[in-house]
Image (cartoon, rainbow over all chains, first blue to last red; front, top):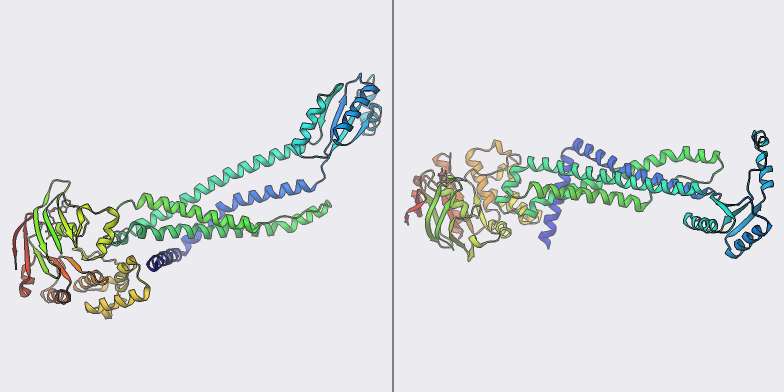
Length: 298
Length: 220
Ligand SMILES: Nc1ncnc2c1ncn2[C@@H]1O[C@H](COP(=O)(O)OP(=O)(O)OP(=O)(O)O)[C@@H](O)[C@H]1O
Ligand SMILES: [Mg+2]
């Protein structure tokens, strides 16, 4: 057990020495790894913040039910009854004449309307549902469209759904980006260690001749990959934190300008921890692959 | 106790480096393997250290059959030997002390214990004042002695040395023989390959003479 610890400690210090032996090379690797990790992390944060931002804005969650032109008082009563029974939230009846009056208030519209022989607008119900999750709102809309004498249902919260889709696509792109950069990180480590193995070929040969196990030969490289990834991850964390700090001042001002109450959410501890951990893990994987390929047999 | 039976080694290119070699070496014995260049001395050394496997035959070292040994057990077997290679295999990008620390690092010895043993080994071969020396500044004889120090630093019970006096003048060679005798006296089994029978005549040890891969004579 003591030997085991001694061997690991010495492999670890070997790895640290290797990192310190070429400070410039190490620094460059850390910049590459740090940047590769920070980009997807920053993207993730941006999406997170956008979602927060969207969540903070009051959304006009409305469903408009447009009645067929021939609908009469009886049909309106029928719809009103159904709305009451369905307990969907609040609603309001907008007769076609009222709608026309409102439309006329908009600049330029009266001239257009004047050319029409009659009021082109339908009678409508505007529903504000209680449950504003996009799925719930949509299913309500589907229900309404099946009701008699309802000609058309319009979802005014369309943009919310679009935004949701946009977020989903954004996330997928970030995952793909992260995969790409993660792969790059593995390749960088793989190659760094390949060069180290070449440079230390003599030492490795001698060590094997006098009784070094495979594990002994590999260990310093594995620690090296792990440490380099870990430090790269920490570097990425500092990049993201610094970026967020630089942006948050101007953004706060911008938001305040529009009277909003929102502020940039930076990297939390969990995300910072995962970023560092992922860096270390990927570095270790790169090292593991490299020693497996390059140290197969003396 | 080392016992070789009907050892043969044929290299992939078809050269038969050893043919039907059999011998026993008792614990604590001092044996010199001689023979002219190409006789198969290094090949025998490599078989004994499990660096190569024999084409046929068996080698048993302290009850362990090297031929049947699993690949993963070989490093541990090698650690029980002290090995001095024909071309020394020292690391020229490190100082004398660091070269000697390597076997103990491999064995996982604590640093302070390793340092103590390394200094003792350097002392034994008369290099204690060259601890920090760059290897390129060491003479051929000093490099040989450093290689011996590295081989014995883990206190092996068997020391295998391949041509430890190549390129050395008679005085330096005699110095190395003295070191070997000291190990012999404390009970270490010594197997030394040399093409220079003159060098060993003064200790009149057991000599295994190889010729074209066969044992030509085995004399005390
Ligand atoms: N790895 C190898 N592949 C092929 N042939 C080899 C190999 N090693 C040695 N030989 C051949 O085997 C024969 C014995 O070689 P070996 O190195 O054992 O001789 P030696 O007695 O140590 O010679 P020297 O005194 O020059 O060191 C030689 O003919 C040599 O060419
Ligand atoms: Mg030889």
